[in-house]
Image (cartoon, rainbow, N blue to C red):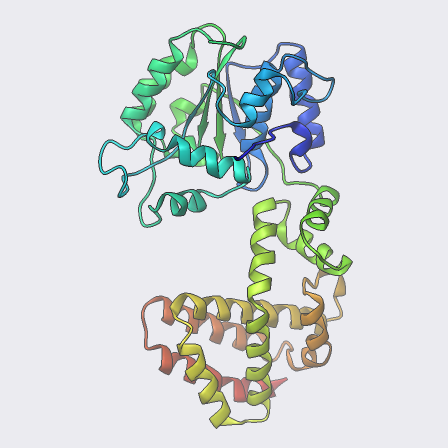
Amino acid sequence: MYICYMLFKEITGQYELKRQLIQAIKDKRISHAQLFVGSEGSGNLALAIACAQYICCQNKQDDDSCGHCKSCIKFQKLVHPDLHFAFPVNTTNKVKKDATSDSFISEWRKLLTGFPYFSERTWYEYLGIENKQGNIGKLDAEAIQQKMIFKPFEAECKFMIIWLPERMNATAANKLLKLIEEPPANTLFFLVSKNIDQIIKTILSRTQLIRVPPVDEQSMKKMLAGKYDLSPNETQVLTRLSAGDVLKAIKIYERHEAEQDFLDSFKLMMRFAYEQRFVELLDLAEEMVKLGREQQKSFLYFCQQMIRENFIMNLQMQNIVYSTDKEKDFSQKFSKFITSKNVESIYSALNLAASHIEHNGNQKIILSDLTIKFTQLIRKA
């Protein structure tokens, strides 16, 4: 059984915004159509649900829902009869035509209750439509109209949470304009967006904008410390790189876990290049070919990151070096080889190789050529 604890206290950071939202609810100043705009890892979706739960809570606390009343329990399972969702979908092997949000409500609840921070791409992968663009179309708009005409079943309000309204097509938007502008009594629309510039302007103009800022550093550090076994330096680096985005922090951590092999390969490539060991370099290129194009691109981007960090370290600008402890150990000796004389050329060579691989060039030739280039570039320091 999946349980979704959409309490304000469970949302990472956002203390000032939570306080403002709670006060607005207490003062009954909640607009009938609110637009929560922030990065996918800001917690904007979780905040919208937490607001709805707090409004419906039968035993409100000063700073949060009680979490125990009948209403809260239903919200935790996302099955409250007055809580409705719309989100981008497309046809799948399961739903071959006329796909709507209701077609995938079970999948939505399962993913959302597992962890309330996820990306649009993660949602599509979960549905098995990663090669398609999701959208909120005419059928969803008609379903929203039908749901919103009824009075609330149990709570004082009914809610329609529309995730990624930027994926709403013009037909759906036109059908919903009047409803969003003048909804029935006790009806609230909470729209949750990651890109305000892509929302149809007629929809945008009918909402009250709530900007969800990046998560503050202290909250991010606390979240990471509770989730992962990290050193203080690694926590600091991850916090800086995440730029206040919980999803980005998680992805960077997972990438760094996978990149330990990348670090070993990078160290070998730099050592062989400096010592001009051409046979070993070509053997290393052969091994990289086995990775596949996506892994090859990831490796080359990792190399770019390492070159950047080593150049910054060489400049003695330690305060903006974002490396893990293992990377720093290597860079203490290696950074002296990355200077203003070769950093641009090395970075450009890596970028060009990644571009050629992206455009389906011959991987063996591209990677072999790159490793040989390094024998010249690394000695220009």
